[in-house]
Image 1 (cartoon, one colour):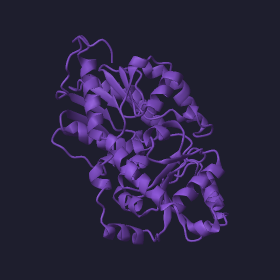
Image 2 (image 1 turned 90 degrees about the vertical axis):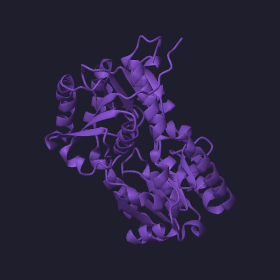
Image 3 (image 1 turned 60 degrees about the vertical axis):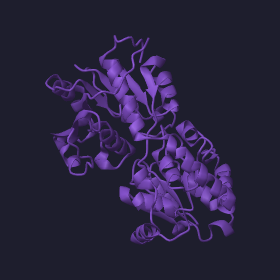
Image 4 (image 1 turned 90 degrees about the horizontal axis):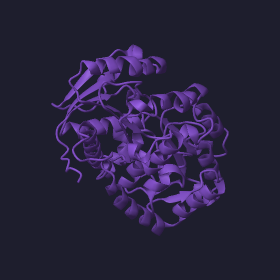
Length: 392
């Protein structure tokens, strides 16, 4: 008979060296996971010196260790995880280690049990998503370090399927727990807040919103612009499309296409958007669109639904799984299908209301506290494997 684990207080070390200066989904994951785990555990979090000043969580149970900024670059960051982090753990009183993104950083060995979170293995699914170095790193180097990981948490069933398929792991080494969303941040936004943020960024309504870093081809911005161009003139005459996100690989290709578009004046690139400005942007949008070619989860999908914003997304990867029946889906490789679904949402107010209602219901299935509980229980099972528990 399996024991009844109670998620008791633990001493946990977390690597925060893939924080990306707070400008990525993994940074948000690190923020929220740390805050949720602090409630019932003692944490030590390693952060680059430059990131400490912007890290939002402060708690009596949290100790932050400063790491030199010389480890910010990819090569030095990898070296820190492979060599320095294991040595730090030898002298740490922490009982276990959490790596928040093992699809980016792993240890070759560890003196303590390791729980690793994997977000996606999109390199296997999207050709040209990353440069050759990063692709080879994920496909060939990271798998060599997997024996170091005691247990893996995947952020969706689709990601778990990929981990088992591409990294050749057994089913019992991988569990699934979804990301969450901050309900206090994304709901109950006042109309004045919306108007202030829109005025701040010189945005006028109506507009479609895509929250994502500007990346080609993975995030599929160009296909979305083409679908926007295909809309009937009466639908896109006064409509704008807003891209909220910083430049990434291939951004210049996206912006070049947009500048040459017949609707160039209606396409707006905001760059990186502060977290506090996102909820008003979602609330002010006519619809949120996520045409990505592949996602391990898709936090903006849940954020948009939490704001009651009608949402459309690709019918692939984890997006279809997370959306369930609460978003209108399309084939991200089919511009005609994408444009047709956009037309449906723009023309049919009852459909927008239905998506709004379903989205508000669906987002309640995602919680950072649920994630913290899941990870806490898995760590207990790792630390006390002989208490009647047969597998992870």
